Image (cartoon, rainbow, N blue to C red; front, side, top):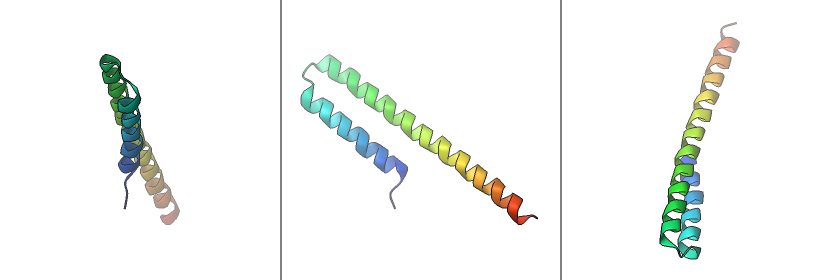
Length: 68
């Protein structure tokens, strides 16, 4: 089973490939790669936070339903 990180990495690696293919200025290329890496970490953190909130909601909702 694929994790959300698998899909995030796929999209972000495609971005890096585009940068490496079309950007010729090395200093600009480095900065764009750093931006893509920062986006990757942010996206992964956002997904983890969202999943944690959803899991907590389902756990609490299930407890409320089954304790009655």
